[in-house]
Image (cartoon, rainbow, N blue to C red):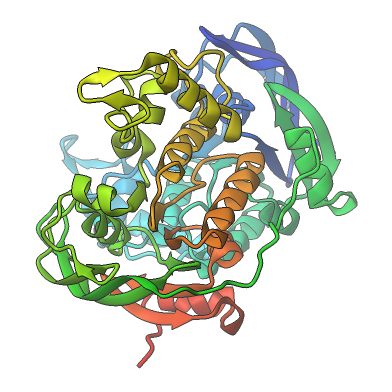
Length: 506
C-alpha cells in the first residue's frame, strides 16, 4: 500500500515533559486510522507537528507522499494537502457558511470587496460534489454543531486537502450527527483521501477505523488492524492494565425526594431565557441524568440550583425547604455539592496549591481550623488522605494546582466535593476530556456516592456516560424538559431525536 504520511523518530520536548519520544507513525492512502491514548499520551502533539502547529521539533523527519518535507506552519501543511479539524471549531460565528468556507482564499471584486456571489457558487458546488447539505447564506452561529463540523471539513476540501486529521470529532455530536459524520468519512475515503481520527471512544474506533495506533506516555505502544483486535486489547495498551468498560451498578434504593424544581426559569449571560419552566425531582439514592446537546440550558440549570445564577421565577425545594434566596455558601452548608463543567474557571483556584484546593470549603471548620487559626498538620493529613483515596498523581501537595493534568484536576475537584457530608451532588460533565482509566475510576466513585444514599443530578453530553450511570434520563432542549425515560426504555437514536427537538413527550 502507498504511504501518504511517514513520520520517523519524532521527538518533541516541552519544558516539563517529553510529549513525543522517538515516535514512528505512518498513514496509507485511502485509510481511516484511529489514534488513541490517555490524556497527555502525545496524540494531539504528534498530529499538530504534522499540521505545522508545534514547531520546531527536537528530532525526526516527515515524508509526504514519499518526499521529505519541513512543515513549519499550517499554511505549509495545507499546501501539501494536509488539513486538521480541531475539537473546538475555528469558524467565525458571525460570518455566513460561504464566507467561512472561502476565508483566506476568497475571490474579490476589484481586488477589494469579497465576491459573495462567487463564494456562494463555490459553496454550492463543493457541497453538492461531496453530498453535504449546507445553506450558503446561513450564519454559522445559528447552526447546530454537526453542520458546523461539515463546514470545517468543506473548508479543507476547498483548499484541496487529501489528508484530514479529525481531533475528537464526535465529542459534541448527537448519535444522528455521528452517524452522518461516519458516512461523510467513508465517502471521503472512497474518493482516495486518508483520515486520522483522534478519539477517546473505543466503540467508534471499532466502527470506523481500518488501523489503530495506540500511544502511552509519548511513545507508540501498538499498531493494530482493527478487525483483528478488541476494545480490551486497545484499552490495555492505552492504560497499561485491564480496564472495565461497564462498571457494576446495583439496583437503586430510593429514599425520598431530596431536590424538587417547580417551573423554574433563568436567563443566560446574554439575557435570554435559558431555563424555561423546568420541573423535576431527584430522590436520595438516585442518579437523574440530564441529556442534551450543549447550549440548551444545562449549564444554567446547574448554576441556578447551586446559587451561582439568579432565579427568575419558580421554586427550588431542597429537603422540603424553599432555598430560592439562599446564597451559594448557604446551599453548600445545607448539603449541596457542585462539580462544575469548567474545572479551570469554576472548579479550582489555579493560583492556589493542590492542598489549598483540596481543603477549600472545609478550611474554616473543625478539625482543620478554629476561628481564624488553621491547624497545619490536620490540613496536610486531610489533603494527603484525599490524594491517596482519589489517586491524584502529584509529587507534592504544595505544588501549584495548574501543574496537574486534566484528569488529575478532575480527580481533585471530585475528591473535594465528595468529601463533604452532602445530600445532593450536582455533577456536570464529570469525565470531559479525560482518559479511559480515569473514566472507569470516576464512574465507580459516582456510583458509590449514589449507593450511600446521595441524590445526584448528572449533566453530561456523553450518552455512553448517561446510559452507564443514570437511573432515569431527562432530555433538555432549548431550556425545556422534552422527555423523561428509564434507560432501558429508549435507544440512543430515539433519544437523539429528543435532543434535537424532533420529538417531544406530550
